[in-house]
Image (cartoon, rainbow, N blue to C red; front, side):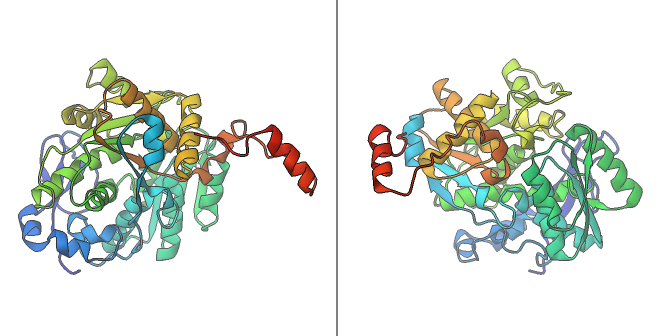
Length: 419
């Protein structure tokens, strides 16, 4: 690929245009910037048949991604399965349920590999040799792994109380990892200062406009996997609110370039943890004001962003699509993780437990019609957040190595749980 379809950057508040550069906000009103494309030219250049013939990864949608040349980072990211979840659907009482399973994304088992591959490819185009991020875990893993594979230096800052598996999953790649005694929002403010002091490419700060575009490919893959049609409902986990906004943008762009017939195509529902739910609270209260949560308190640390950068836009997406928002307690989260694992054999991290639990609530409330198609976005792997399940999962029994002992066991207890 040698041609870029990117016009530049555009302020999401005032609409002012800016050139392609490592910048994330409009100095006139401090509105966030997003990438703007030449959609007419793209529509003349691609077709469903052409995309279907390309390798099964996120770059099959390259015309709608913001890099100027061939991707240099993450060439195998994406192409994750869309699982027809009949057993979970039966448990939840919904007729047509799918799991978009980014818990098996390459290389670090979360959807963050999508955004990072775009951000680092763009950082290399801009000539950066050092990249970094503020992270609640999955982004740290992905920046570390992809930077290592790309030969880039990396500096990653995270809250000190992050899950041990995510700390290890970052450190193994040789990144400079720094734990901060504070919340994610405090970490993010510090990273903003570092990015501008040292001139580094922080993927979710000065590279954020490009980075966020990678999220669109999750939705684009769903539409293609459903035979070029959108589901009637999405349930999307929310931390900073970027992913749910890009679900909406992806649907609109696919329609604009002729790859999706109907728009609006889906009701988009948001899911947060009860211990950090600024966006869902705003939706349920009927207000545009996002009130920050100063001290998040939830086992879903990957969603524990108290002051979401895209919170205002996320609640707009939810309302404008006809969707709704709910949140899940720690107990709900664990039950959601177990239900997904026991019905579909998919081990999701805590954010996945939030998504499953919120979907169940929305179905019970009648916010989602049980006869409509529904896609749950599972964004990370349960191997990263095992600590929260220690007391919830039954410990394996120990018996002597004899048939008599086994028979005694199975005669007194069920061999396996029935869901």
